[in-house]
Amino acid sequence: MAGNFLMMNVKQLFYKLVLILTGLLYFVGPAYGVRIKDIADIKGVRSNQLVGYGLVVGLNGTGDSDDATFTIQSVAAMLEKMGVTVLPEDIEVDNVAAVMVTADLPAFGRKGSRIDVLVSSIGDAENLQGGTLVFTPLKGANGRVYAVAQGPISTGGFQVGSVSGSGVQKNFPTVGRVVNGALIEKEISTNFNDKPTLTLTLRNPDFTTASRVSQAINFAFYEPLARTLDAGTIEVTVPDKYKGNTVQMVTMIEKLGVTPDSVSKVVINERTGTVIMGENVRISTIAIAHGNLSIEIKEDQRVSQPLPFSRGGDTVVVPESEVLVEEGNNPIFVVDSGVSIGEVVKALNALGVSPRDLIAIFQALKAAGALQADLEII
Image (cartoon, rainbow, N blue to C red; front, side, top):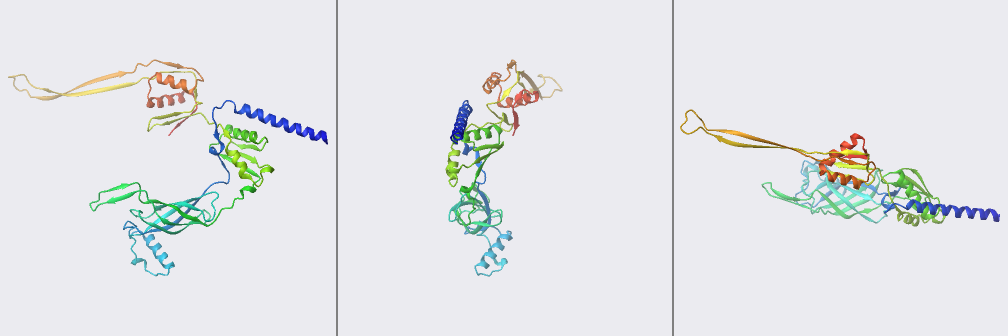
């Protein structure tokens, strides 16, 4: 028994040493790292979207017009629930606007907590400034009510107009926010502390990044807790000492530093002439020559008139054109295979190319098969 126990301790110690050495070798090289919480999310821990239909009252004649029949019907239905019976054709809604109310329910939102709501006009209201959102239930995708919204609206803008039609507008007064305007009435149960495993999902799936996250977690806990399921998923087993206290384990995992990897890419925005290149972009051995051709045409109007004392001549306007063609005389530069992004930039700068020229050059490099990176045009 003692021998078996000693053998198990030796194996555990050996495994821990292997993890430490692997971790040290793994993290040698990258000069920076980002927290796992900044590149990955925990599966099941997310916000949920809520939506509701409501009315904004108290507007100064800037509400929906009589053409918005749904607003009139909503006001009539609301008054009927309050014990006031009125015919829809007798209602004018200049001071009322129909709106859609949206909000995000936090992952661990509790009853009694308050969240902000966004109010957007769906009719032909001109301005929601000064209005008040009345009691509006907010429902989730399953049709259940999770919060109730009510309160004064802050638009962050204004609109001032005259009878002639001229006016001044700042921002969009038909959209507003009610700060802390919704009260959470129903919670979403998660049983987070009872989970036997945690699943991390990378926001930008990548096999190398997923492997580094798994290595970092195993190195930090000295146990093989994490395993990579695919390029975007890492499964972490909750050890016995953290069961019932999973939050503490998540806190430790989120603070771990990892250097994310990505595919080499060149992004080009042709509308603005912007070129963005990643640090791992490489090109094959090529020779680059880029010349500019400029054509300038000048046209003047000259007056031609007959000689003095001549007969039968008329004074006329004669166009005179001058064409100037100038072609760039740039030399050919040779770029060796596998050079870094800095050397590529130096070579292109030596050619005197502009961002617009860079776009044409990179497109030509990709067509020639010399660009060892993805070329994305947005």
